[in-house]
Structure formats: structure tokens, C-alpha cells
Amino acid sequence: MKLTKKSKEAFENWLVNDSVLCTVPFANHWFYEQPSSMQFGVYVDFFESVGLDVEAIRRAYKRGKDYEWSVLNIERDEVVRSGFSDSRLSARESAVSSANDYFNEIVG
Image (tube, rainbow, N blue to C red; front, side, top):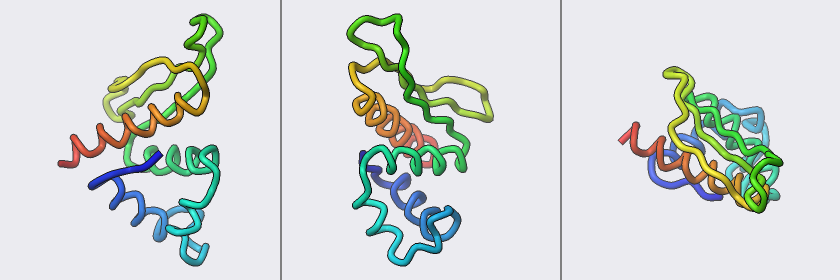
């Protein structure tokens, strides 16, 4: 789960200045050494701070694709990206990647 372009720049600025981790010395380096599940939670907080709700949840109704992920534009109350994955990790990665792409599109 890696962010790119404006999304990465905004995230790293938020991480060291506005997040709960801002008191951690070298927060940027520390963050990237954490397990993906911990990174996902921090990404969720970041994207919420910029108006995007990022989810990756288990749904039992899709055999083989049991995990649903989505990105919601909170202000417009609109799902802007969504899909299904075969694992929790894959759903998290897809959600963050899609939020990253969408953020980069709208910020330019």
C-alpha cells in the first residue's frame, strides 16, 4: 500500500503535523516500517481528514470474493470506487490504491 504524487505529499504532511502520530520522532520512517494492517488504519484516518471514507469489509454473500472495498466521497455522499477481493489484505490494498488515485485526480 503506497501512495503517490499529491496524495503521498498530503499524507506525509498530515502524518507529521496533524495525525496522532505527529509526536513520534521520524513518523514518516516509522510508519512505513509498520505492518500493513496498522498502515491501513492510519490511511483510513488520513483519507477521512480529506473527505474520503475508505472501507474494506468482509461480506459472506460473494463466494470466493468475500471482501468488499469502497471509497466514498463524504461531501457528495457518493461511492466513487468499489469492488470485491478474495482476501482482506487485497481489499485493503485495492481500497487504498483507489483512494490514492481518486485523490490525485481531484487534487490534480
